[in-house]
Amino acid sequence: MSKSTDPMSFEDLGTVYRTEKKSPTLSAVRRDLYPAMAGLIMDLRAEYEKHLSNDPDSIICEGVNQRRKKAVSLSKEITEIRMGKITSLALMGARGGQNVLNNLTQEERDFYDDILNISRKHVGIVDRLSGKRKFETPDIDPEPAVEREIPKQVSAVPEPAFEPAAEEVPKRIEETAPAEEAPEKESPDDEFIVIRILEDLPPFSGPDRNYELSKEDIVRMPKAMAMALINRDKATPISPGP
Image 1 (cartoon, rainbow, N blue to C red):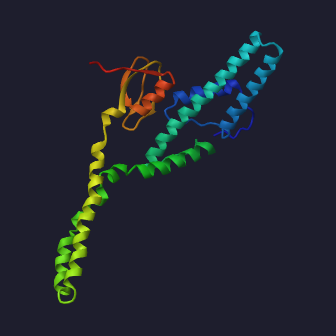
Image 2: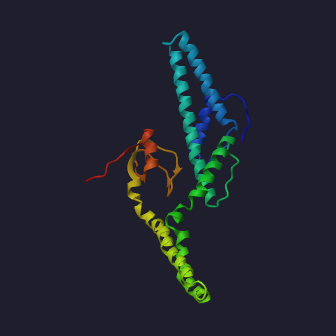
Image 3: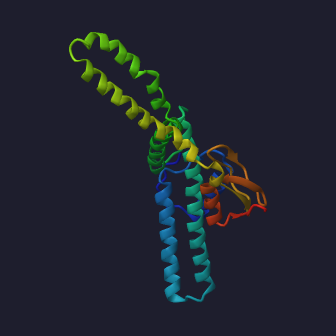
């Protein structure tokens, strides 16, 4: 990975974008990638403002402005493509996978660590919602334990020893019941929508599959991911037929 601190040129930015878009994995980039992209955008903005004050109607001014806009667009695309790949790595890490992180910048490593920590907490959500841990509690039946203790305490305090144990049983049942009902409230079909792809897209990973989509493809995907594509004018929703 390059450690260059030289200013990034517009051509350098284009090379990073093309390489990242073609590669299914994170490509090696300069360690100061994000400061370098920001520096290029600031330089182009300053150049545009200079031409704007001198001759706002000139073709040179418009050309610099278009290059500035293109640099902003490419920088965002590079950031989002790499974010998708880093997120996939973090999910694999949360499942116990061993990832090679040499191609991450320091900013990306911080992002990876955050996603990894969140993913590790989230990976057991189904067990928690299904009450898997709480469901083991009823297997230890409190009533037989009470019956075994009665002969030992009957001569001393028979009534108080039995009544508190009897009151604990319904409390445990009430705590367990909501956890068992939680998954039934989920509506998976409501979280998916069908969309039509408007342009070729780079490969990316979803929660249940990998996507390699081309223009005019029809696909059903999680609503959050679909809306991300729709909001970026890369897809359009398709209403289901009657």
